[in-house]
Length: 229
Length: 229
Image 1 (tube, one colour):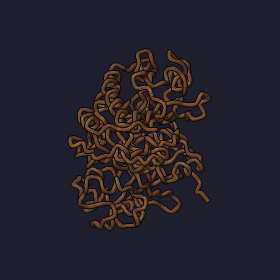
Image 2 (cartoon, rainbow over the protein chains, first blue to last red):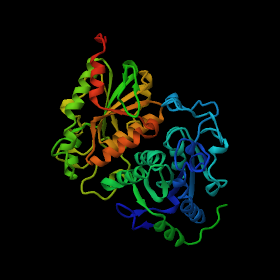
Image 3 (tube, rainbow over the protein chains, first blue to last red):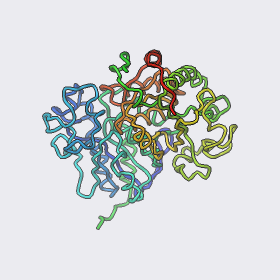
Image 4 (cartoon, chains in turn red, orange):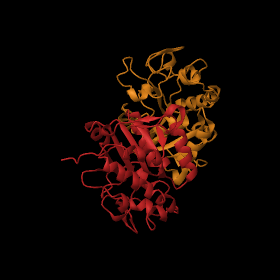
């Protein structure tokens, strides 16, 4: 498959060796009343990408592509939360404290669930990650290697933090990465624009970008896929 | 020690648990005639930070602080160079090809050496890294943990690529990171500015920034340090 309108040049991938990676579309970052909003962020910016993400996810599922969901999540005892992360800036509300949607960034809490529109299906990978990057301390690279994956298509939030960090990790590990521009967002639109620009600069030094309007027709044109056993 | 004028708020560190990390100040990226220049980049931008880097390095050495140098370097047989990195964009000159300063990005070649002004001293860590990030496939985290290091002060090039990637990796691993703004540079000044801004945003989500003019007096005020055995 080729996305001829990807930037900075066409992106080639085969569905069987590609995964759709959806970064941190969790309630606490996306929904009103969650942790992100209590920090003063306008979550409507992030909510705006949900329909585009949903369209890509559904098309990817129809094509029987591998799906990876991630959540920024810590263990209930905070054993995987560095003090430098929990205490930075002496915040009023820390990771592990009780917020409007349960304990903040703790696995299993209501706010830590992926939003209903993009909820993982049984059999899809759902990775709890203690860092911004999806590869640190998660085993994700090994899982992808076992599945024969060489190409990663990214969606999710926020562009310049968890998405960028994960793409940079993936790039160092030898994956050809593509970011779906209309399926990612930041609380700070200027940071999104800068992150997108710097990742595809210098001949795709981190990876490619494209919009879902280029991916969806390519997926729709695939022959019907048999159901996996 | 406290850098009161760091952004977004003061940065506290102790010399004995801190390391100065100098990213990829190698000839091929900095010197005229090297790989960076052959790609069309203006290396004079990067050369301009060398005096500030040198002043910090010398003050850090006088204070007997731990120094880590990194080089983007691959093995001569390219076993640690992913094909996705070597072939991306079908370049005229690939990693491992012979350039004006020897084989490009190959450990031990002339162009892969750190510039003379910042050359490692015996006993300083010098890390060859196959990725943009200093932590992937290098053992750096384990070395820093063994040395009791919790705080990292970063210099080097380029800001939005190898420096940013390394700081994001370090942040996920629990280090409190500071970037010395006048000791880092990009071939694209707008990308440097954006990377600096997004790293210190949201309460130092990746880390702090400061200029060497704030660090140097703090180092100079330290009591004289005994020579290590």
